[in-house]
Image (cartoon, rainbow, N blue to C red; front, side, top):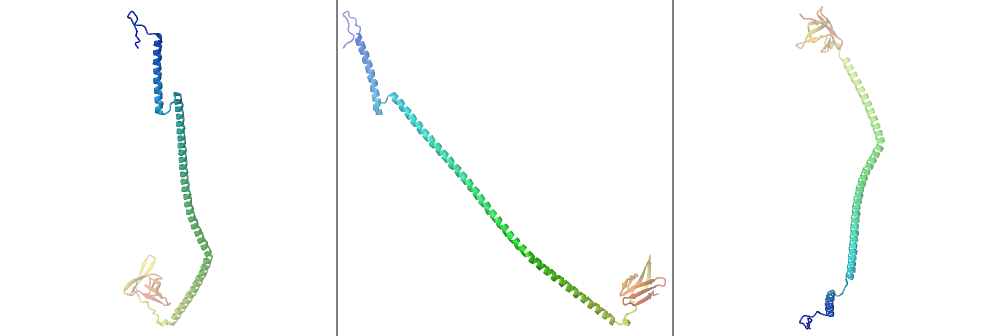
Length: 248
């Protein structure tokens, strides 16, 4: 149908109002139809039509669910971390206590060894102390025996000395007086004077010997020196005496 109709004068007529209204309503209908059709198309893809409000609620539920899941995971992880830390602490304490127990046991073993050694030493000391009186008795007996031996030796020595003295006396009695040589075995050579000291010079075995008062030579000792008379008196150990003069 041709909308642009002309009037009798050849000019186009204005469209009636109902036509304009109808066209506008048609256009609105078409727009609404297209919108509804597109909405149904989206609902076919998702197999369910959800309004914007429902979408918001769903998002909130999903967010709450996600938060709850995250919270549960966080709580679970926290519990696992706490449990792991507690287990680690317990293991560390157990290991530390085990080491302390082992150290105590080792110290106890060492102390037991030391105590055993001390007890052994005490037992040995006690045994030695028990032996001391017996040792003193034995030592006393031994000392008494030594004293007796010394006394016996002294008696024996005294007896031996007495026998020797008797033998010497017997021998001296057996020697006759006339057999003793009454002449000294040396010759008076001179008499020297050094200050107040008088010295007799004699020849004995072809050697000159100096003899002072009281000095002895071959059992003859100087008894007197007379420088004025140039004589020297000698005495023998047997009691005999003889006076020698200087030979000119």
